[in-house]
Image 1: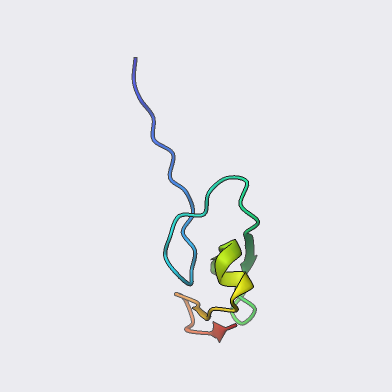
Image 2: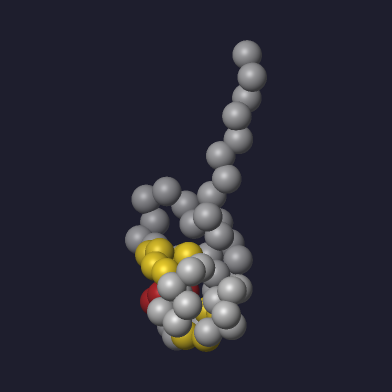
Length: 60
């Protein structure tokens, strides 16, 4: 029997895994509309900054 691994998305702000069931959000970068931004519940709550890896756009 083979084991498969599941990779969780990482929060763009804190780089921690976004767990299933967490009140996180994901959206395309508002500037380039190319890169997917993930925000954990905690980073959203505290308005931590994020930076798009594609274009460098920074947001709250």
